[in-house]
Amino acid sequence: MSDIFNNIEELVDKDEKLIDIWGRRTPKFEKKYEQSVMRVISDYGVGASENTSAKGKILGAGYEPYIMAFFIGLYSGKKLPLSDDSDDLKVLGQPLDKWGNLDSKKHRKAYSQLRSYIFIALVAKTDIDWIAIDKGDLKVSTAVAKLIETMEEYANYGFAVMEEKLNNDKGYFFSHRSFLDIFLQLTDKKSVDIDEEETPEDL
Image (cartoon, rainbow, N blue to C red; front, side, top):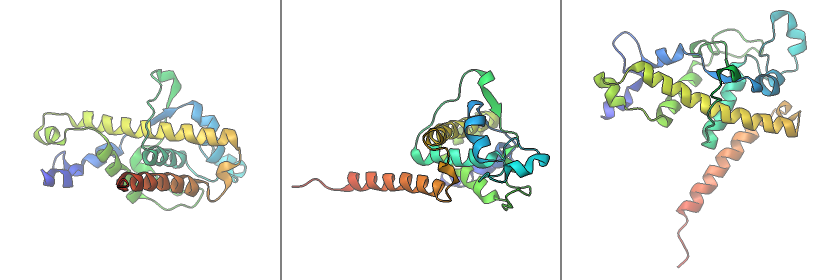
């Protein structure tokens, strides 16, 4: 069984990896965050002729705030289901395997390793019977759909957090420490919780 879990990304066939199938998918997000978060802090929706007006944005392509939202949800340990109404949803625009591959207006380098970290986190946090997939009893498409759903729900919670911070302070994310501070708070909280759980009761 350990061999199966060590090679989950290869659980499809000899010619294709599960991570590659997942990478061709494009996650959705709730449209309301397009104006309240994504366009505020990134170049999302900005055409080449509009670069001048986008110079003040701290993030580049739309997948960058999406990644931040995902990790906020992941480190918070909280997911938020997307709206059941398809009219409330929008596809992000680029499939996962293209994230960071192209030259960015912000001159960021490709981050294929980051996509691998996201994939590994989704595998760990999604209830999927990998043995059934290996045996052919569960469709790969079903597993990939579950991975994407987990990703969307973590990101949806993260967007809600980001929107709240912008509502309270429109310039919050224009500090170079904004995201760092969020993640430090989340990891510090987890370490405090662990310390409290492991502290023995007084005798």
